[in-house]
Amino acid sequence: MEISLWGDNIPYLDVGADTPNSMTTYFLDTDKPLACIVVLPGGGYSERAPHEGEPIAKFFNSRGMHAVVVNYRVAPNRYPAPLADAQRAIKLLRARADEWKIDPDSIVTLGFSAGGHLSGACATLEDVTADRIGADEVDRQSARPNGAILCYAALSNNEEWGNYACGENLLGRARCRLESDYFSIENRVTDETPPVFMWHTSDDPVVNVKNALVFGERMREHNRKFELHIYPHGQHGLGLAPDTEDVINWAPLAADWVMLNIYNNK
Image 1 (cartoon, one colour):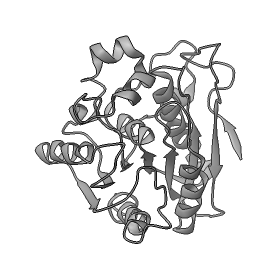
Image 2: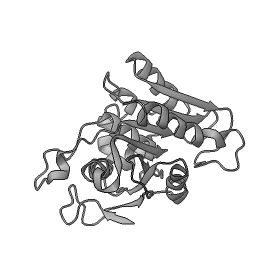
Image 3: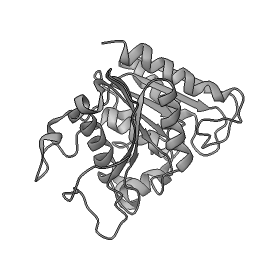
């Protein structure tokens, strides 16, 4: 089911850019409130990869969790539009938790590559629509997820080992030069950052594994919970990795992590 994120009052609107303004829901038929996974496909902030959307939602359905896929805005839209869309999805899930049978304290963002950056941004950056003109009752909900899953995430804009191209698509070239440190998610970890599950391959040719290693070190420095899996081999953009023997276990591990650390840890 497609659900509108904003209705007609869309913040940070670029009238010349594609504005999907929707999330696709994959809700289970249940009488019990369940955890919900907020899926954010990758695509360099220039597109949204289909294989990192619906198949992921359906996998987590198979593990007894609701899921939504957020059709967040990409370039030529710039920050904060993508983050606003992802945060709005989280707020909608909390605002309608009773109706949709969602545990509002068990909402987890899950993103791949640039979507992983967006997942991490939800966990660490400020609410970009808290004080927007025309705010509604949904806006009063918390935009912070209870946990985040980061899959070969392009977390850093560091020019040496980060993914500067994603940063340029998100911020524009001029702003990326000026503010790349702020939007490098490893720099935004605090003592309040929610638990994180991460996985990466050591030889990823597109997003350096150092993105995961440095973020994990920041989590350790702040004494925050995290789980990190580094697989020896695998191309970028694997999604569920059905044809990669060792990496294929990441999704069951992530589902177990949600059930152990988020849903049953209240």
